[in-house]
Image 1 (cartoon, one colour):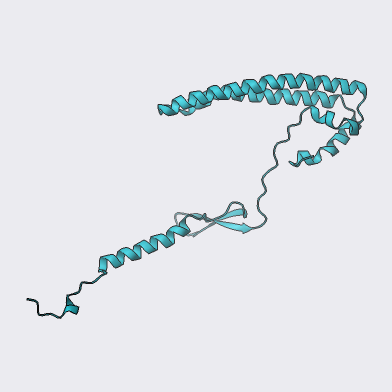
Image 2 (cartoon, rainbow, N blue to C red):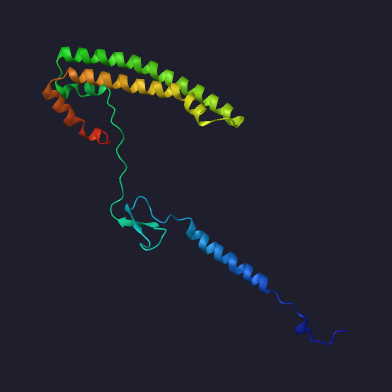
Length: 195
């Protein structure tokens, strides 16, 4: 039969193809871990762009992070309502006439606000139904989605205009000194912090 000793008959466990496949797999794993990280973190400060090679025909640019303070998110928009003046009525020393005028504006705004909020909820519900049907049949175009939200957008704009108009009418009822006091009282609120 076979005259070779048993040690020579043993097959190699790892052939050259297996070794190459293992090296490639380890390389993919190592480089894949680093590939998920962004090159420049947007919240580390400013990002400046500089040319890689000025002489190159490509003229490519690369981002380089400039160390600095993290970029702060802007404060939320300050959209005051009339009841804010009533909350600070004692500090503003509102007269009876001013208080009556502002309370009437507050009542009017509360009714209008309730009506507009209900209409916006209804508009969102109907838009949601339209979008679900469009998703089911894969037939939603950007214009259909935008159109279905048109009522909500219009109502939201109307809501903000009414709120701002009532606020301006309430401010008109205040004296210059009271407006100064109100501005001082609401400075933290306008910067996105609580009162």
